[in-house]
Amino acid sequence: MAIILNINCHNETQSKQFARQLAHCAGEINQALVIYLAGDLGAGKSTLARSFIQTFGFDRVKSPTYSLVESYVNQQISIHHFDCYRLSDPEELEYIGIREYSAPGHIQLIEWAELGQGAINPADMIIQITGIDKARTLAISAHSNIGKQLLACVNSLSS
Image (cartoon, rainbow, N blue to C red; front, side):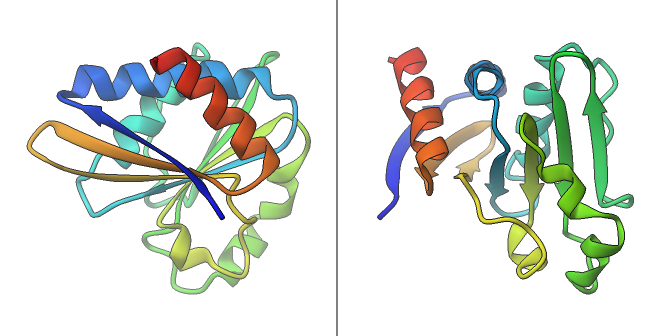
């Protein structure tokens, strides 16, 4: 059974702050980490991913909508941001070498994960984003021991 934490963000600044906290916690884990970002179009998945990635010093963060994946690698971290929205077949992910993005210390942020089923790794954490206007509710669930560790860290920072 998944452990769930609900966080209310009343504006985009709070959503970005959560993303930075999540990034801080994820940076402490030196194992492969898979985070699904779920929600309707315009829910804030890409905003969350962008703020997460920028926390590690990457100023120019592009949307992977057309390329399927954008990677951000420096001496500190390896982040791979996937957007499966335009995927016509999950096998396309195999062609771009998705398995190579699963090494220890690599973080996968995956939008529209349901469209990549069968090719993507199971989630350690799922963040379900809902909301109206700029307010967002983040329903965060842990689906592995690493996910539980990450969730505990995020919870301690947001308390």
